[in-house]
Length: 142
Image (cartoon, rainbow, N blue to C red):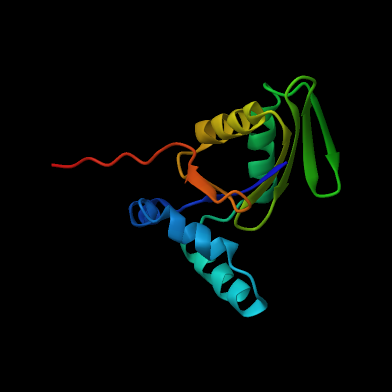
């Protein structure tokens, strides 16, 4: 099982975050109530909020192409594929929580769908200390 936190970084802060992904991973992985409040404020500054029904419908439309079985349970959308496994999504204020059980192809399907929606998403897998842009930021140097 892999658990991801996926954030939508504001356009004006992408170049600042680029190259500092590990620092952001450490920040979102921090524990403790006082730290959590501070992290929450910092994330609200650099991240776009995940807008409920609009984001849900767009994500749903993109993912239903890859997953034949979809249902809703509590706060989660549950996408199932008979060969790849299952994917649970929960939309939070400033991130999308994704739980993948099964093949790593699930992760790729999710990341591909989200990267087509928006080029500002960055994903963190805290348990395995993995992080990365779903659609890498392009920088021009002159």
